[in-house]
Image 1: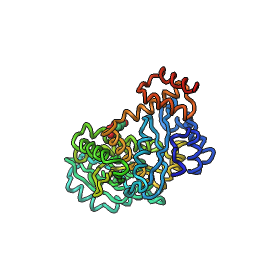
Image 2: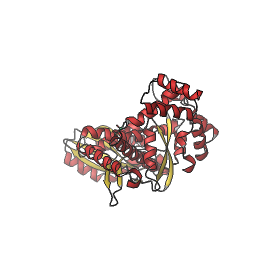
Image 3: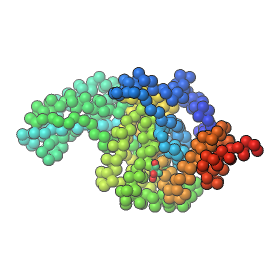
Image 4: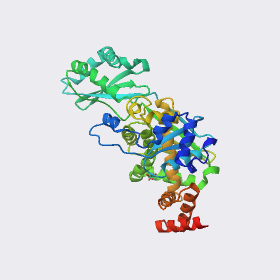
Length: 413
Ligand code: MEV
């Protein structure tokens, strides 16, 4: 971590050089990461349909994350300024303890919908009697993946008005699991039709992956962040709990961080988004985080939510950058990636509440904006950029004319 102090002040090239060294990247890997056109047209064309190009997002590294005593460099890809800086700052304020986190076993739930059942009671009994045959079928579907610990764990039958839902639990190991779960459901569906006498319609996993949750907690000490920030975060949290309009934005701030980690590592961030909001809405839409004071008056923040992430399979395999970002992160399993992601989500939420309830977020945004203007008018070195940005901020005049004047003055001096 010491090696990364002042990381944000370096140029992008210098930062990559540091990360290359720490994460042991090869020259080729570093080259791919720095090549903002790394996704070549032929590969993009094999990933999705009707391809005409690729779009790019900045990739940054969140520093200061100590999770369960281990340091992580967390890759984040997004277009929004301040999110990475906010995560780094909030994480720094948890040190030296950092975050405690854990994640469930990677169990996904897949649903089979059965309709037009002549006798629901009899169908349920029949499914119970044929349980071991059905499980054997499901195991057969997943046999090719069994060596990685991927296997069906069991199924439940749920009655929903005039339908039955047959819901399978599948341990998908370090994969996201959608293809494996969906293929298994399609594989057993004919048998389900036979045993129920009904018609199978939908066969698909649920993104409300309640059996694959991740959670994290961190303490922000009053000596570090100040009592007013703690009171402000608690007031902000109170509002999110009582008002759905605020709660949507509260949770959006959490997902700013989590989605960015998912995107950077080639994961299905829409699946994580869907799971997060459905989970938040299970008992009336609520914040995904929770805050309270401990007996010392410090702030304890926690987060718990479904977090479906993969370190193998899908775009993790095809994307030229995902394998490298995972290598940089140092995560060893999908569970560890899920833990890292929820820690970032919690950090971003704390940072947002801390800023919103005190100085506001525009100050930080304008600072970054000021740096962009400084570059725009020709500031070159980090010192020059900082000096122009600071002056713009001080004068509260962010026009490019003003920036140009400041830069000219600086260069003469
Ligand atoms: C902006 O992308 C995210 C915030 O609005 C989150 C929040 O309000 O808590 C700052």
